[in-house]
Length: 374
Image (cartoon, rainbow, N blue to C red; front, side, top):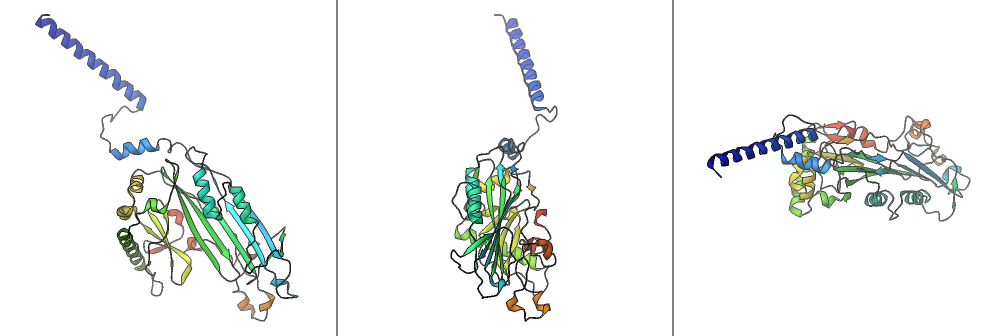
């Protein structure tokens, strides 16, 4: 082959490569739906996020309709002979908005198991069975054995003798990688009202429960440093509070944590507000040194936050004075605390089981009216 023919062959091959490259790029443009910035540099995080959450972004989580069940019980005889207000009574309430499908997956075995365990303390596999077992078991303030019967409607519950127990399960937040479910438990024991909240974190991509140890490192040094970060946040909050309303430092890192849109919530009980858990919100950026490597990666590749509206509300808790205390003044009787089953009769004295949601949430130096803004 002559030198001239060799040059012609090289030129033809170059032209063929250019045509092939042009055809390939046109197909890329057509497939991607973008005709500009085709060669823009993209951060590796963006690439991983798109790869991990392509399905998540398209498939929203689905929950069952709100289910509300109640059972009512009363002892067969009064504690004080002749006094109709001295019957031990028990009201059980359950309100749930249960997950039906998460990121397109309906096989939610691990999520159902953890929610049942945290809500009802049961190892049963079906929510309806665990819910029924909880509802049919009365909670009396003092043992009555088998000497009780069920009622078709709610009894009036008097101080000392009445008990109202409630379990509420509902979605708190979802994002591309996380679903957070909240479980609230409220009990009026005839004297005091006690409440607690538990959060279940579920990885929507890997379909697994995230325990606290999957989220935060547990070695002593890390925990001590994290406690300092939390108490620094408490000091910051105290700057906006008046004398006598200062929050005390946490003695340990709270065991109950909750991921929200703007940071992580740490729940702890403080001093005279022992029945009123305080939520301390700490930015994710400050918590990175304490995250496990897996969870740190999850937070970096997470987006699409949605805070669910709080539409699963507890039943009202109010008072009706017992005849055993009828000698007290009417002014005193208005301050008495007990339970009646009719919320319409108790508007002025209704108790919100999530009382901390309506004025006891400390954040950024002031109280938040609603956690849903987070």
